[in-house]
Length: 188
Image 1 (cartoon, rainbow, N blue to C red):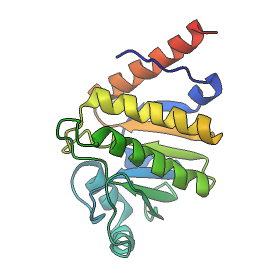
Image 2: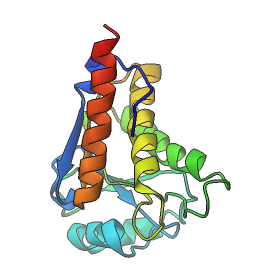
Image 3: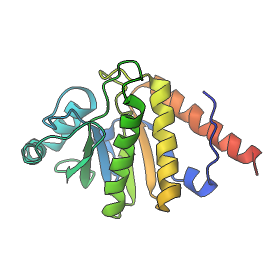
């Protein structure tokens, strides 16, 4: 997967790829790859709800759901993170039904909340790559490019951690970030 974007080095220094469990992150906020009901589910969503405890579900019930690509903020409850940002990513069909744009909005709108709350750090999972079936390589590119674009456009730098549960995503994200860094160095 080749990286075709040029990114300011100071932005790249804020992006970290971690293999692990997002529920253990100490970031200001962790992002939940939620379903539109916001009432918990499988994968990352279920793990975050279990780790946060019943207060999270109670607060989520008061939000009235969330459309794919939008984002909602709740407290972190029993998590180490102060906040949870919930964003339903798209269910992948064939990439021709607005899935790339919706996935980008999931990351972008989560970052808008982070900026509005002056957060210093945020941890993302690989949104939509589990049961929603988004191709992992495409999702990785959208995730990292969107974060870089947001920090550059909005002149807002925070530590962004991509916390990846599976080895395949961990390798993809590391390789893609390495390619962006190499592309950046070759253009200096």
